[in-house]
Amino acid sequence: MTYRALRVEEIDGQFISSIKELSLEALDVNDVLIRIKYAALNYKDALSCIGNKGVTKNYPHTPGIDGAGVVVRSNCEKFSVGDEVIVTSFDLGMNTDGAFSQFISVPKEWIIPLPKTLNLKEAVAIGTAGLTAAIGAYKLLANGQTKGNSILITGASGAVGSFCVKLFASIGFKVIALSSRADNREFLLSIGANEVILKSDFEMNKKKPLLSPQYDAAIDVVGGEILENILKQIKPEGSIAICGLVASPNIQTTVFPFILRGINLLGINSVEITQELRQQLWHKLANEWKIDLNAIIHEHTLDEIPCLVNTMLAGKITGRGIIKL
Ligand SMILES: NC(=O)c1ccc[n+]([C@@H]2O[C@H](COP(=O)([O-])OP(=O)(O)OC[C@H]3O[C@@H](n4cnc5c(N)ncnc54)[C@H](OP(=O)(O)O)[C@@H]3O)[C@@H](O)[C@H]2O)c1
View 1 (cartoon, helix red, strand yellow):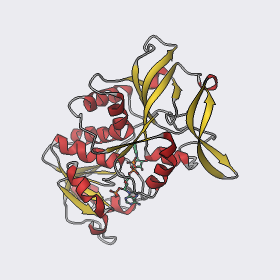
View 2 (tube, helix red, strand yellow):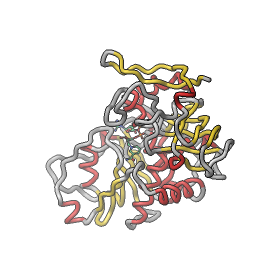
View 3 (cartoon, helix red, strand yellow):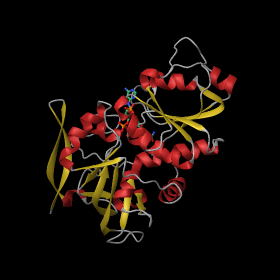
View 4 (cartoon, helix red, strand yellow):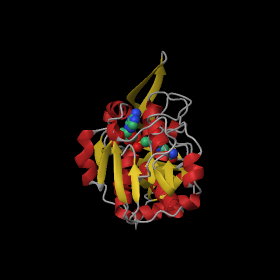
């Protein structure tokens, strides 16, 4: 039997994506075989599609770090044929063939049963972006942030950013969305931002170690100069949760925001969290933190992924791309 998947191949030093018919027998090596119904596009998938060896070492390869579908074969007691399940993070789509495919085969530890309050499309729309936002919320709340506080969210139009805007607005924060794109202002206000600041208007000052304190908290997906200047503008005892590097992985800072304002810099790693916290956060995302994602998601086919990847790498994607298999 064969199945369709988006395959990335290295040909003469170039990484080329195309849809291939592959043999299911060659894939079926792990505990559980899942027929994927929906996948989602993440920044890491875009990097895997262009041959980023920090994400994927060996090609040919099928990217896709988020998938949701139905179990079609199981070697373990925990899952039975017909179960609806989600797989995100771990090694899926990195060095294990991922969810831009009609089938995946994965170890049982990577699988989360679909929460009763979600359907497969809603679950994949949450996926890594939602889990990342939830880890950020969990850490900020644990460090003293509460509803009513102001939070700056960078890369606000993207997958993690737009999810954060919706989630923090629903928790009751005053959300300030930082975006590079003026044409996304209405979109960001419509999904819950109280205010939109354009990147070109954001206060940046290379010389001063501290700027006037503006925000109780922040979530940053951008890194680089933006993060350097957020550090200078967080109010005393405030916190920044960081997860991304779309602009740059490098920052230059002084110790002053930390020793004069007592701020906290909190890291988010959606791959390396305990299974207990992962399940706790999925429970929250499916219940008290469940948000309507219809305004954020846009649905596509496998064939459209290469084009979406180019848009994403150009920093021009809005919301969360969902792939229907
Ligand atoms: N640590 C973790 O566990 C974890 C998990 C998920 C994602 N991430 C990381 O988080 C980042 C965002 O992922 P994503 O899936 O949300 O990506 P995405 O959908 O492409 O969103 C990124 C957004 O950042 C803004 N942006 C892009 N290039 C920029 C630049 N050069 N300078 C300033 N802003 C820029 C754009 O929003 P605007 O147009 O609104 O500015 C863009 O939509 C990536 O670095 C990803 O690897 C980390």
